[in-house]
Amino acid sequence: MDAAVVLVLSLCCLLLLSLWRQSTERAKLPPGPTPLPVIGNFLQIDVKDISQCLTNFSKVYGPVFTLYLGMKPTVVLHGFEVVKEALIDHGDEFAGRGRFPIAEKINKGLGSPCDPTFILSCAPCNVICSTVFQNRFDYKDQDFLTLMGKLNENVKILSSPWMQICNNFPSLIDYCPGSHRTALKNAQYIRNYLLERIKEHQESLNVANPRDFIDYYLIKLKQTTSTTLRYALLSLLKHPDVTAKVQEEILHVVGRSRSPCMQDRSHMPYTDAMIHEVQRFISLIPNNVPHAVTCDIQFRNYIIPKVSLSLPCCTSVLLMLTGSQSCYSPLSYLVLLMAYTALR
Ligand SMILES: *[C@@H]1O[C@H](CO)[C@@H](O)[C@H](O)[C@H]1NC(C)=O
Image (cartoon, rainbow, N blue to C red; front, side, top):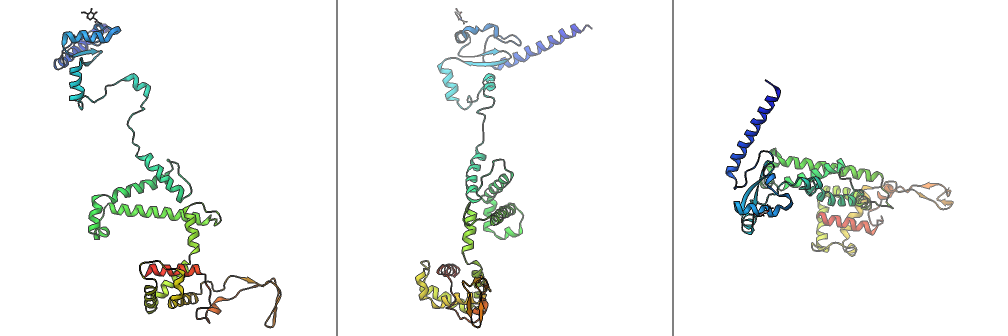
């Protein structure tokens, strides 16, 4: 058989098929002028005056009719009554938006739906980061994204129904698998991350020029007598009778309703003595800081020249002291007293 005949025959088949499809489709749609295959009602429409043309069609087919603009049917709603009935009374069903290819081309996806969650959580997170870590992060920074991911995940887990169950049956936390384990792991990750940053800060800390919250924190930490406190706690644990007496004095002089102040010191001889005793006992800086003589001096039977250093060995002194002569600053007294008060 000739190739041209095959082509014509198959085209005829396609034509018949499309006619058949169109007629079955049209049977369900509102009436309208009979369309031609492929081009539809194109030839029946006066493109110079489309709205008049539609008015003319509505006179023949009624206020709701079907036009084929190409292969696709378009249902035309003509007149106030039907437009109102469709867009107001059936507003939800008619709320969809038809395709408008040229506008799509112009907009190239602008105005397509977008989720602002990410950018809205990045912004405040970075404000906090710049306060705490000095630097803000790029929104694509992997460290930043991981940190934020873990924080977000934990917020989600902590507000889940499973968390309510865990809070009511705490033994589940230790013995059951579940999302709470992820929350604990995430918290550990965040803690490790912070510890690393703090370590970095410690190495590059300049007390004269604090850069951020961590620096201020480290400086404050240095100012407190944390080692003394640690030893004091240890000593008090070892001597519960002393602890009880100190507690009683604090309760009697300071009470529970206010913070301690310097004036309390003179009214608390036992606590004052205890703090002195802790300092004497632990001998925190056994050899003191080096001193130097300011001029040649005859001391006992020796001449000590100006250049030499002297190390007043504290331990040797502390072994003999019973308290009040050792000197510590009023500030450290207050810090210690506050710490004890907080511990009571
Ligand atoms: C509308 O119908 C009128 C009268 O039948 C006719 O004169 C006019 O040309 C038609 N207009 C269009 C745009 O089809």
